[in-house]
Length: 137
Figure 1 (spheres, rainbow, N blue to C red):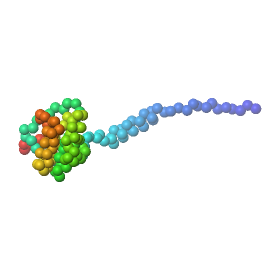
Figure 2 (tube, helix red, strand yellow):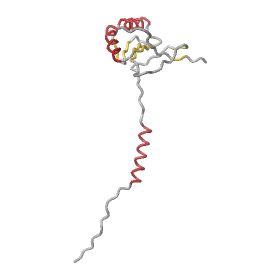
Figure 3 (cartoon, rainbow, N blue to C red):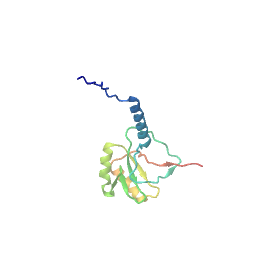
Figure 4 (tube, helix red, strand yellow):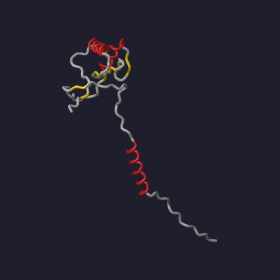
C-alpha cells in the first residue's frame, strides 16, 4: 500500500514583522530612558556675581569642596569633618584640581576655616569658585 506523504514546508521567519517589532522597542527604549547628570550630594544656593567669568573646562571636572548653609563641609561629595579636612584635601588634590562652592547662607567662619585648610594643604594661586550669574532685568 502506498501512502501519500505531504511535503513539509521548512519553517520561515517573517523578517518584516521582526523589523517592525524591533523599531517599536527601539522607540520605546529611547523615549523612556533618562540621561543622568552628575548631581551634587547637597543642594547649595550659590551667590550671584555680575563680574564673574566662565572658565573653560579642561580635562576632568574639578573636585568640589562645598559648604552647605548648615555649615557642613563636603569634599568631592563626601561629608568631611573640619579636623580631617587637610588630609582629605591633599588626597583629592593628588588626583584632580579643586573648586570651591559655598551656599549664600553658609557661616562665614566655616568658609574661612575651609580656605585656611586649603592654604595649609598647599593650594596656591587662584581657586575656581562656583557662582550664579546675576540677571540684570
